Amino acid sequence: MIPGPFHYHRPTSVAEAVALLAAHGDDARPLAGGHSLIPMMKLRMAVPDHLVDLAAIPDLKGICEDGDRIVIGATTTQREVIGSDLLAARLPILAETARQIADPQIRTKGTFGGNVANGDPGNDMPALMQCLDAVYRLAGPDGSRTVPARDYYQGAYFTALEPGELLTAVEIPVPPAGHGYAYEKLKRKVGDYATAAAAVVLTLDGGTVATASIALTNVASTPLHAAAASALVIGTGLDAATLKAAADAAKAITDPATDGRGTAEYRREMAGVMVARALAKAMRRAKGA
Amino acid sequence: MPVDSPVVPVALTVNGKPERLEVDPRTTLLDALRDRLHLSGTKKGCGLGQCGACTVLVDGRRVVSCLTLAVMNDGASVTTIEGLGTPDALHPMQAAFVACDAFQCGYCTPGQILSAVALIDEGHAGSDEEIREHMSGNLCRCGAYANIVEAIRTVAGQEG
Image (cartoon, rainbow over all chains, first blue to last red; front, side, top):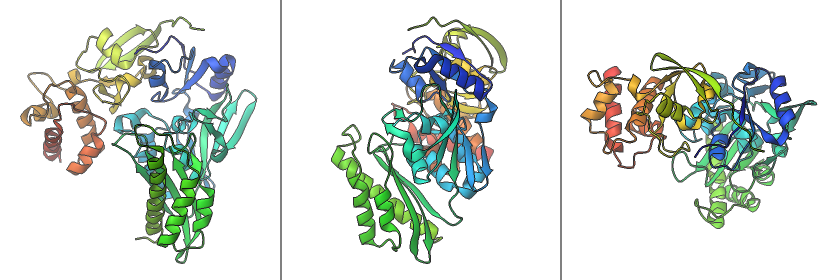
């Protein structure tokens, strides 16, 4: 298993990287941790002629606060997400999710930007970014633009990213202090992609849900923002009937494939179970229990 | 259209020794270590980042060397099993693997040991459950897991 031949580039600025990507179009791919792209290249499912390594571009790395948003640079590793004090304080669901991605070695090199950018429906961060209503910053030859995570994914490995464009950072609105959160992932073994997974962030007003956002991983060709299920729990105390109704509403938008992780019917059912578990856990956390 | 890969220079420090190579950019760090530097202690298992047999430390952090290109690690410091101890002076983790009988065929063992050393450095040896979780990237088809956990617990206790 050896990748096809390619030219290796190591630009030192975003402008230089975008110029390389734009010059070579579909024949070029950006390279971050490489833990999705290099296996694809070894299997010859991807045969780029040009690899643009982003490792020497300092502007793409790091986690910072920008007003009411947290901005995560594309080449920030999952290990750095897990180790961030800022994220632990403001957005603990990020580390909770990152810890469920692959294994420690993969998280050393695997990047946050690669996980959200490449459109693999098995990746965990895309649904979380939809749950949090994050915005992706894309740089291209004609300048920069932003695309909401909820509009970015078009199909398995098909995204709003155009040839010549590069995802440079992700802006995440910070939920209010004291919010409840949970990322519940069913998997066959540690390191596996999700059989089904659900991300939940909610806030309470007294004992009832004031705001809620639910999104699903790996139960369709794209991550899914479960808007109807989210709306359904607002104003409730998340009693058993509401949990079931929200799970049913989430299941209704899934379209999972039958694969080694189970039949489509099983995976749809598990999506509902993950939604109910994540809602219940988020509620407990919001109540400080 | 396929292109020829022009060779690229790579400078690495491997087990404390500076190395300069000219490599085809397709060369993984694993193949550079094994085929170019003849350090065959690092094993090639699945080649797809799933088994952990090729685990080495890059700048002190554990990575799977099969999924990173040598050229991506230009300037980095790499530690392989050959750099950890010597047959006459084993690293404490190597000695613990022997004492606890933490391997059978031995193929996954260099990766297990490098991963275990990193695990303790990361502070994840607090309980058997935590050790198992943070050794999840290293598969052992002989099933020596119970003794691997024992070896790691032993070393963590000595250091703790």
